[in-house]
Image 1 (tube, protein in one colour):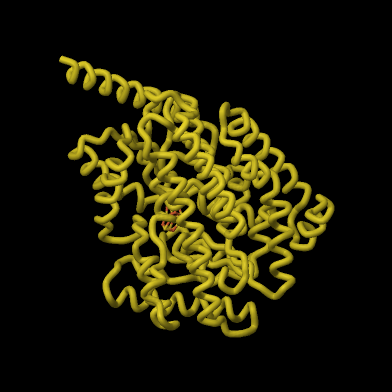
Image 2 (cartoon, protein in one colour):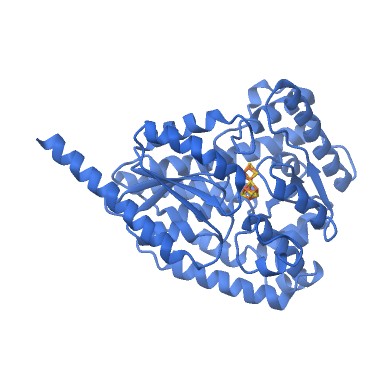
Length: 440
Ligand code: SF4
Ligand code: SF4
């Protein structure tokens, strides 16, 4: 596919091509610096390097072809929107959460300064017309998970057709009934785009495709984080793979992740590690890392640690559960199983959200991690407030925890690095003291 064709598609979908090209150059430059300069990377990361170059180019051409066949292209902002239905219709479902500082000043012409940068970044992309995924969307599907998001949709709808899915904030029986109706309504919106009813078989196929994608991501998660001495892939590379899962074509993506996993298995059996065996291994908890938010991972891995898991929506929360196909017999049971699967998402927008803490402690034990970072995007009140209860339980379990609240600007990079370095030093000190005591 020639770049000329990509340019034609970008023009057709009304992208500001000049500004877009400048932005992509900057993003790719940052990727080259942070990712491609790493030593001893798995060879299978070559596909993902290509994808970084082409996700706003060839991938957009691919989505354009999908649309030309009368299939849907749907932009979303949350892992509650059931992508299985879009994929079942042969369409493309992609995440629009913004992880870049570049569009924020534009967003602040319409949105308050003091709301989460993920929303401002995404809204700014729309105002600037610099995200080809936003521009490709037949419609955008927002949800009511947090205050800032649900009010932003009213403004976003002035610029791009936006539907809103009502997500209850509790998981009682009546809430799940409402939720099921919302999933049915989402299906109707997809049927409006394709101009016909979606068959039961198509939806089952959509579920199978997405289940396989989540299986591959879970496989990667285990390979990267379960071995205490061999880390076959950096946290940065693994994060980028998960970020790509929200925008790549799911069948090809699954195949590429499984190829990467095959290589990681080989590396594990040959003791090929990208970091030394005593490198402190950290889990990150909290808010999502939308592309290209690599700030925390870069700070940790430049400071002598490694991130082995993200307990986040761009991470484990996204792929930990599958839809149970065994219980599906007809369309009604299919809807029930979709709701069952999605209601296991333990986002801080729910009250209570007790299961999340137990899960975190279990994840920590399974990985024999050395510490956690509770990461919150600035002004994300749900995750920020919930951190109190999480940290209380972590302290009881003797798990070292560092709290970091940040946005996408480069202003606090130095400060974050200093705090991470001090945290890693205290972990190393405790580990040495423990070894010394054990040796006595
Ligand atoms: S953190 Fe909550 S609101 Fe944000 S994407 Fe995840 S589930 Fe959705
Ligand atoms: S990170 Fe927090 S504030 Fe931002 S969109 Fe997600 S739930 Fe809302």
